[in-house]
Structures are given as structure tokens and as C-alpha cells.
Amino acid sequence: MTTPLVVGNWKMNMLASEACNLAQSLADLPVEGVDVVIAPPFTSLYAVSQIIKNTRLGLAGQNFHSELKGAYTGEVSLEMLKDVGCKYALIGHSERRQLFGESDAEVNKKVHLAIEMGFNAVICIGETQEQREAGETLKVIETQLCRGLAGLSGESIAHLAVAYEPVWAIGTGLNAAPEQAVEVHKFIRKILFETQGFSVKIGARILYGGSVTPDNCKELLSEEEIDGALVGGASLNFESFYAIIKSALEP
Ligand code: 13P
Image (cartoon, rainbow, N blue to C red; front, side, top):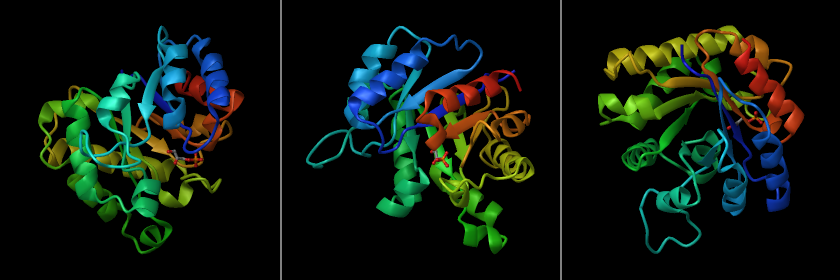
């Protein structure tokens, strides 16, 4: 059975002291049977890494530059993320795509780089409201997935997770219904294993993200097709994030 993966994406929230407090509460949890990863802002990564270093909690970068080093003012490299203890990296979050113009080609470059450098890459994909209403959801998913993963070897899948995050569900309080998520997750699995030819045996985890809360996590995470969650707002609070972690443990 796949171990569920629950990732808390703290986005541009929390000062270092707040991040450390929350990390400490999470570090004290007995989290056997579920992989829990947190993605604090860059400014808190090092401090948080010191708190969680002897625990099962994982650390993720929310983003990184696709070059390894150089004159890129304001950017952070993958090596820097590794240096502060990150083993996971989010790639192609819809906020990066929509607000910062990140293209599928750039996402693809980052996925290659992250996997080459031994990271677990979490590639984020998802359709907008307009695309869903136009009946284009699966087409959009296929395009983002195939372009984002182009050229990856079959074994790469062991280091990959795909997060399905419908853009209309992010931060809106309007989560996808379990059957909507399941339809897309099945399609992603089909693309990964049929079109892209990855091996079924090791399988990437497919996460759902978009307004996951303690109220809806159980029905989402009890679906066999949903291997975990990428959580934004509800991961900023210990009680709500812990409730989601627990529901991944006890589907
Ligand atoms: P919310 O859980 O706040 O909707 O955010 C989801 C998300 O974007 C996680 O990456």
C-alpha cells in the first residue's frame, strides 16, 4: 500500500518565530504511517530544519530557480534548498504559473533538475474555472503533465508526486467534490503509466489540493485514488493541519 503524503504549503505566511512554533508542535507528533512535509517560506527554512532534523517530518522548498547558481537577484537555487535540509520541492504551483508566468517548459526544466539532485519533486497541475466550464479539464491536465514531465526516465517516478490542484478550488473554500478529484486522478494515473510509460510498480503519489479542510479531508482522503493532500490555508494552524494528517492515517 502507498504511504499517504500530506504537504503543508505555507505560501507567503508566517514569520520565523511563528514558523518555528508550528514546526515544533508538528515535530512532537507521532506521525508513523503518513509522510508529512512542510513548505515554509525561504526565510524560515533553516530555523525550521533545525527543529525537525531528527523527526520524520520532511521539508520542502516552495519554489527554486532553474539555474544552479549565478546572477539571479532575488532567486534561490536547489542547492541552497538542499543545504538547509529540503528533500522535497514544489514545482509549478498555479500561483507561480499565474502570477509569475512560469511556463510548462520551465516546470519541465525544474522537474529534471530536482530529480537529478535527489529531491522528491511535487509537480502541481490544475485547470481554471473557465477551462472546467469549457469542458477542457482533462486536456489541460494532459498538456501540463506531458509537457512538465517530458524526457523523464521511467525510474524518475519513484521521486515524483503529482498534485492536482484545480485553480478554482485554491483558497476559495470551494473544494473539488471527491468524484471530480477521482476522475482527474484516474486520468493522471493513466497518462503516467500508459502515455508516459512509467512503471506501475513504484508509482508516483497523486495528491489533491484546493480548500482541503478538517471538514472535507476525510471524504477526499478515503478515496483510493487520492494518495494525500497539498494543503494551503489549513496547514497554517496546528489543529486543522493535524486533523488532516490524522484523516490520511485513518481513511
Ligand atoms: P488552500 O488549501 O488554501 O486552498 O491552498 C491550496 C494550495 O494552493 C496548496 O498548494
